[in-house]
Length: 398
Image (cartoon, rainbow, N blue to C red; front, side, top):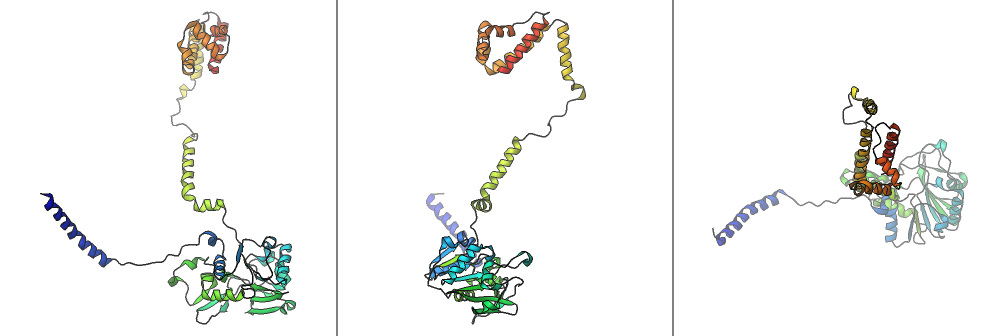
């Protein structure tokens, strides 16, 4: 068939097959867009206050994030704000004194009560004691929180409530709680204020597992701080209210009480596609190179286990038959085979030249090598033993 007829036929056949397939695909498939929420990466994976810091920076504020409270390194100014997510019970006495002195000069401190747990082995944090706040013996209880136009909320469900002493109550400017205890109290201290909270879960980013669920699968009706954190509008309003005293006056210090993952931790949890195959390869190589337990060959028969005794008896028989030169020749042949493997040039020589080459190789006198290689008399047992010993010594030295 000619080319000018073949090509139109092939093109027509391709169109005849492809058009129905395209029509079928368009009728049976639908384009759908889906948004996938990925887990936090980088600093957001270990800093619970990362979203808060980004929001404050977007609002034009200066923000500094710290893993631990260090007043000497931070040196906050009088109009600054410190959000202390770190457990106040971990603060040493000098750090507490420096922190309270800064608040007295006009600072704004937000601190949470210790987490719930065994109070028998716990002491009241020095910071809370200095403020007249007592939290030991209090448990957790949800606090209703309603914002107009939003779903009903329950806050501070996992936080420890607290109480304020009578002497410190005179300095309380704001309070929030019920008969179970307070969940929030704003206490004046000098020219500054301290906000004591039962917890700060509503200030965090999406760190809970439920926060990555689709909206249809999340709990409905009542929302808690553990679900959306700062991504929820009522939580943003509450956070903005708490940061009001020094908002816009100075730097926001966010002490998030966490440490970035170490290099070894990142290698362990994120580098396993590299180190796991290498580890398996190393274990396989060690298994191949390791000594086997037992032999793959069958054990020798019982009557062959005294082979050394037969060899010894054969040698004694040759000695009695005055066949010492044969024993010497066998040992000499053993030495020459070793010499052939270690020094082929010397093994290829003969006579005095070979003896001189062996003496040079072993750094022995040529006469001694000549004595060892010369066959002894048939009835000279002493010479036989001496020369066999020399040959064995020469073989070991090669």
